[in-house]
Image (cartoon, rainbow, N blue to C red; front, side, top):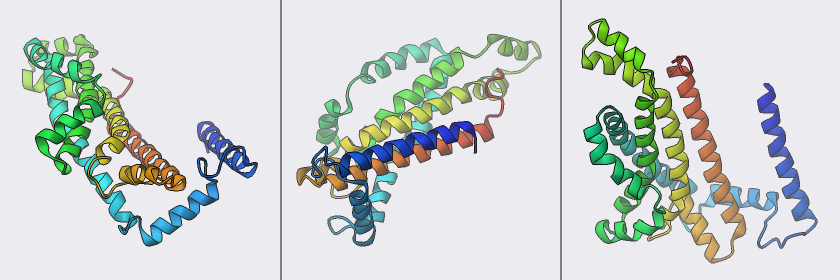
Length: 254
């Protein structure tokens, strides 16, 4: 086990120990801050019997479907648009200001508009997550092109490479490390928006479980939902890092 992993494991063990000590000593009310074993019992109960009559896997599945649908749509649209914006001042002038305008707006501020326009079904939820994921990926594409050493493009052009070949063999590979960073950021932002997406007119999903439990002071369910979302976020980020190391072996060498 590497030194980094040992430190990471030690940090989580210390946090778990502190959590146990605080609850054992009743420093905080159990209603507000449930013990680890209470959260574990809640997880077992939901795993076996579901929540609100809906199986656990259905809650998890709908959350992942909403998340992956939005992120996939964001990748398909934001990657080419970000690269084009980085390469072309015309495209940048058309698109960049619009992205920069909506990017700092809190998702809940325009979620109400999305509900008015697209209804309370899945469309408004996926579009909300899509917009949250789009901006980081787009900006990563723009920065990936701008940060690329221009000498590589000039060298390829001097050797007779066409614009298509330069894009395929120089610009796109050079921007991939930045794009992967943008995708990782987009996943994190989408997770933080997920609860907002599931809080309106939903009856399933991990984020909805947290919102529903808060209405009835079911703190153990709230903690469980938060831990599940955090754990899923860590898992996806770890998978993206592994994929990045495997596919982009030239990272840091440009």
